[in-house]
Image (cartoon, rainbow, N blue to C red):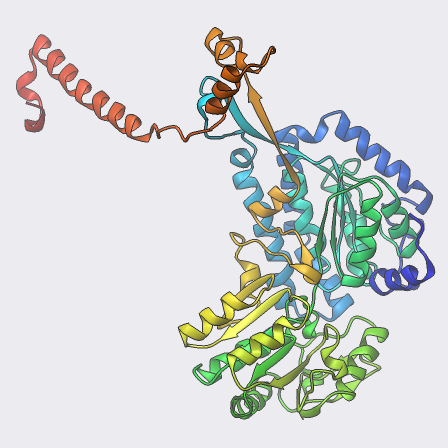
Length: 538
């Protein structure tokens, strides 16, 4: 694929713009640009040799990944702080600990997930063995994002390793300290031929997308997601795109406003708003807005004091370009009701709430990805539904209400990648739930078992022997074709549901239990200790 100049610009916005880029010539263990085809070829050869199909090999490398997290906790916290001024609390909870739990889930369930799964039989297959065999896709590419540079690069990797793939790992160079640490340190813990790390900017990303992979997993902007999807089409490579969008919040008068405000603001200010599922804008009535603002003013002062720029809990915007973009959105839309201050030198923007925001304001035209919360006034939940449905499908939707009918109305009449009711962000932490977008917010899902599923091809298998009865039943398929054969074939292929064998299992177990009692009584009588049996057995 040839990336045209306009695509270069979009890639630049996602993977970096020069000074932050890093390649092996700077000391990383990733290859030089010209070595990328060779690196992918070596991974392909390892996969074709069956190296990663072995369960013990997968477990060994998952344990290596776990050891990488456990032995380097402080270093990981340090590089996250260097890239994003991320507080140690956020770094541990949303990245390092999250990754540790993720790998443990893979290790605890890998044996079960990897087993062939029997499927229900029909009349035509009653003497056969139909089942689904989980197998890896092959050599996969994982392209991470800069806002959670550990989690978003390595959670997909654990699922891909567990599923038996070779994985080329491409962290974002907009988080250069974290990406460099991954490239320099991870190869000491996992097989570097099967799981290489490639750092760099546009040239490296371009060259990677020119290679043939068996699956591509990309996290980032919708604009670059389109480029990844276009590149994947050359080889018909399946993709997961974890993108973003404008995630709305509905807030009504029925809630506990103190709790609601805290939960909404927390979801907005964590990582200084640079979270793909952060609350992007608030929909409520004018009366609810007044209550929200009064409580938000108190909460922000309680959390960050009169000088939020000095609060260690608040991170920083990733770079100057993104700072200018968010500041421009803030200054060109609505009215500043709370916050609004910024410091370009320190890449800091104060948590800000905007009111009198119009649907066509610039802040409502793109994902904010910063600590700015616009409020759009609507008169009812029905109007909120119309507003949400008139825009691209969001990655997340947050519903704050005590009214079950309102909750049901909003859930049933809107579409989003995921929903949390009466809180924000928390659905992403439930690994039993799939996480992913819909429409312009992405395609595919992962986390927990869903990560394993994403990187697995479930191969259908039917094993049939040479049983004469099976041959007789299926001989209707052979020429010469006759009306009688057609009727027999139609009846055979009706695929009626066979009766469940579960009752027979219970009956068998019961029968074994009864037989055991009689056998025990007979043995006791024979050897003369029947009087010593418990009363219930006599």
